[in-house]
Image (cartoon, rainbow, N blue to C red; front, top):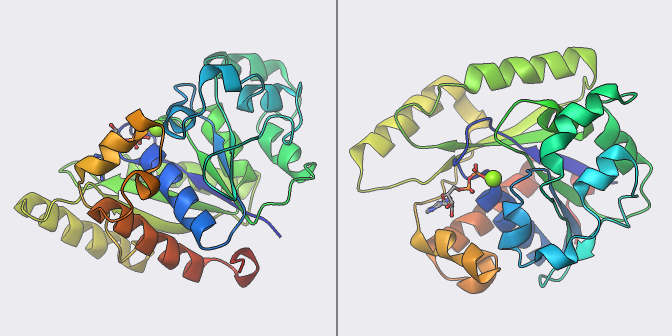
Length: 260
Ligand code: ADP
Ligand code: MG
């Protein structure tokens, strides 16, 4: 059984891609077979995993429009047990192109259901919008992981995200759950961070993961080396936090998804 988790937040720069890369690596390290789907036309997850443009002959765009199967569009990464479905800039036109397609909200879901790949966990790195790409991810997903940056406007926009989830549940995917909200770029020296964290926990309760991801320069350096932080520097505070978050995630997943 495969569990599909969409990493979504329509705000840009909140840590979606950093979380996708490092949680994918952490989950693979614990023995799960993981596929990371890059669904952002910027392709940052692909670049951050060292998959250059020449290795992106097939991509998530081809899968969405039906010109490639999931397996054909998937490449191995340097991380054992972690595969990637890369993104190319073609994806930026997909929102418009897909409007004329049948079942345009279910393209990714149908492709994954018809796939012969054997992954325990599929993570989807969503673009910073609530458009058709993110909707495809939410229709295909069993659960959502929402990174939330510890800043003053952290909760702003969350109600829009949650009402999109409600709409997807009632129309397409009643089983869509929220696996958790992960606080990112946590800065212990900043009192505002503490305040935001307290407020977010007061509003959202136990859906917020206990683990927080610290602001850590190693996390932002690693992608320029084409490596997950967990490989670039597995002892930095950011890597340790993502390992802890992955463990917390596994505890929240249905047992079948937690391999090994
Ligand atoms: P998103 O995918 O939501 O747009 P990213 O994961 O790309 O967000 O993060 C935005 C920027 O912040 C990137 O430059 C990334 O390297 C950096 N970043 C993300 N998380 C952290 C963190 N915990 N500490 C320091 N820098 C971070
Ligand atoms: Mg991103």
